[in-house]
Length: 227
Image (tube, rainbow, N blue to C red; front, side):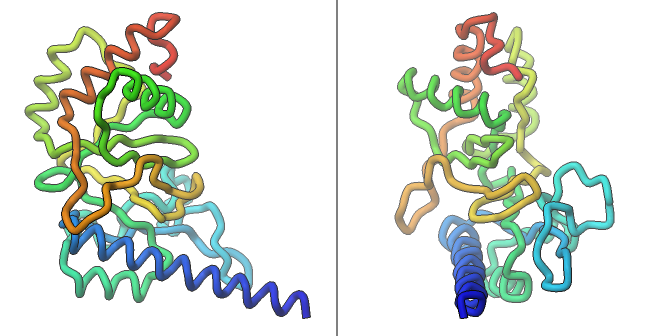
């Protein structure tokens, strides 16, 4: 009896998680107008079809398991409610992948420990942050859309930036909550503002300037944020 009740509970939790992904995808695409597509997801293992930590793509050495587009490709990202509903009805465990750039949000990301310290440092500076996405390995700060040309100008004007920074701009992508990927659960460290409009996003220049300032003023010549 205990085993039967346990199986029922696990099935209920899976149904709840699948519903949460569809609801989140519809909010992102239709309310916030953020173009989405399903990520490749995690490969199933065992006779019960349980998800492992390996990628469902054909590459046995995939370095971002589950956390990237595969089929459809990145250009298929859309805000169309019917397409989004069809995707996550047929693939309810698929990660939510945001196609960054254009009119969509972009992001700056750092390793998780450095990202947590950076967010605390930016809070101490009084910088207003937008949504922050966290995984066990990286934190991503969402920013307003920027072009590759503008990013190049900003980076050229800096003497130094943290070497661990990654930029998710035009032609890039970012996995959004409540996805699950090879490194673990994707969650909101800073939730998007509630309401019927897209969340407010800071300008990339303000965030980059503050990150550089926080890094260069940290003990050890900025090593605190530079790994």
